[in-house]
Picture 1: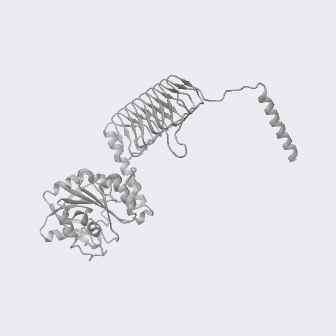
Picture 2: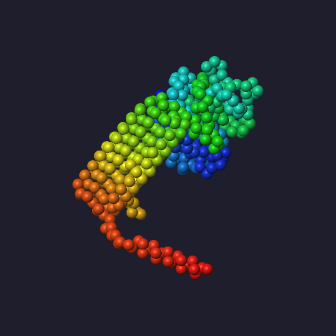
Picture 3: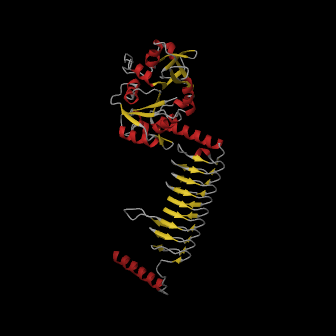
Length: 451
């Protein structure tokens, strides 16, 4: 069924007390808006339209990161949800499919729920997503008769009997686009808030003899986020779900409650994740890899059998081949580490290719930045880089070569060669004792002078 997404994201979110638009506050390293776009993507929409207001340019940029076809429309005045949806009408003129209204600050609607709404649309003109609330509070109520949705009433306008209902409105609506905008054109603002409510379309549709129904979901899916406290609770809920999914798919989490996931973290079966590992966006860990404690990974790929950490940092563009080993206090950035290669201790390897079975000694640094541009270091296969080697890029070390510890390598090293680039050591017998005596004498002289 052809579908267009309309995502409402115009609110400033004053309770967030932030310059950042509310829908751009992150959960699992992705803005709330990104979660909403990803949920709707399961319906393979023809259009993704984001209704923005406060911070529209930042909202536009975030939307395009998650859907490069996303279109932005502006709601310059905050006159209610029906008014917000109406801003998308010009982009969907003559569109023959359905329109699904989602909310940028309600990030946890599940794809399966939207698929059930789409299935219900085959027999009803309008489908609304509802939930049974443990504490209905000030939510709008869904008034039903069996499978039929009769109307939606906002809390401010509800009678006592209607307020006693526990089936609440999430705000998510699915209807034919042409019908949706036709009904919105009839919505008035004669209500307690003086706003144009999207919820009024159900009553207007019923007057026309059209059908409406409600699909229900877990209350947690409909969680709206309006404050920092709610954002923190949402993050905790997101992490709990991601941990449970990882365990269910055969991942070992040694201390699940300490591991932090991003929205797109992918972990293969039988990989092991030790305590206090943080995954930023764009991480893939293959089957059987081992991520040791206190490591931080983002934008990287770790192949089968590789070991990372403890206390390692893998930055974007890093690719670890099978059985590579990255040890404590090692930082990698835009680096390809070959099969069986090792970078075990206290090193920075950036903009680098390391060949199979090479060993990078402790304290090695690839000096990849000259203050203006980045440059590449290429290290061949079976290379031994001595401890505390500085590799000043651009530079290449050939297969089977070796560098002496403490060397500063500024020129290419031929295959199988030994490169040593350090000052010759000079020993001067007895000189240390003489220097110490001179220093002590100066100290005694200063002390006498101060008296």
